Image 1: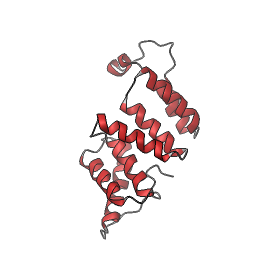
Image 2: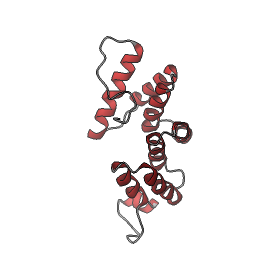
Image 3: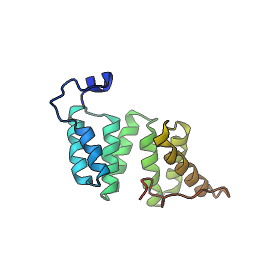
Image 4: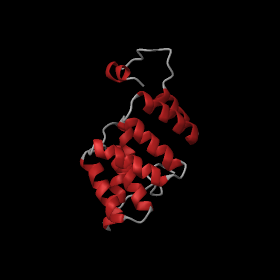
Length: 151
């Protein structure tokens, strides 16, 4: 995805492949390895793009490469400390690996500057419920298994 596409919301070079969109379509179809390839190509077009990097981290998580996913999320947070998606993903990686304090810290960071929109609602509820559960709060809602990705 070119910078012009991001700025103006349309494809300036319409004959080019939109690797980011291709990657998200492949993710939706459960083709995580293929999506990773598309996201890497999208990253070549937009080096350091935090949105693309977060999608790469999600793909890594889905194929079981959690160390690579964590590294990618941390890379995003170095340049964008408020990247809510990176905090969310990293929180659940830490939680699964038994690092509860780190998970809590990233869940709090996610909830301090949460994403907006209908799509974010489930993630917000999941983060709140997980944080409540980690703190031992009585008011703990159900979750999706604790992986942060609905699976």
